[in-house]
Length: 141
Image (cartoon, rainbow, N blue to C red; front, side, top):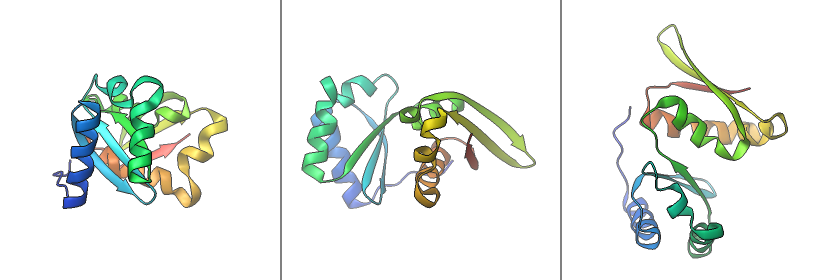
């Protein structure tokens, strides 16, 4: 797992998110057009807000898409949480030599979106997962 450090801008995002939602941010990743906040286990509902009001407000304030992921100490659960928007059917984690690999099975109609244009979404998800669990590779099935 990587040591998580925030730059000045990320610290501002985290402070704003925590002030607005009264939840605990475990991690924050900026990926092109969006911000991904990882919140403490159990804080997901509160952080999104009633009918997504907190996410909508942050999106307006920051002019970026906001994605909220619930942290989990269980690798399978965390991987499922990262891919939550794509209707996860299952997560399988296995050793392939000295690499730990996760295969996420999502709803077939959402597989393309989970991977993203030129694999962008998958790359961001893989990097996010690797920051919290010793998983080096992720594929979408």
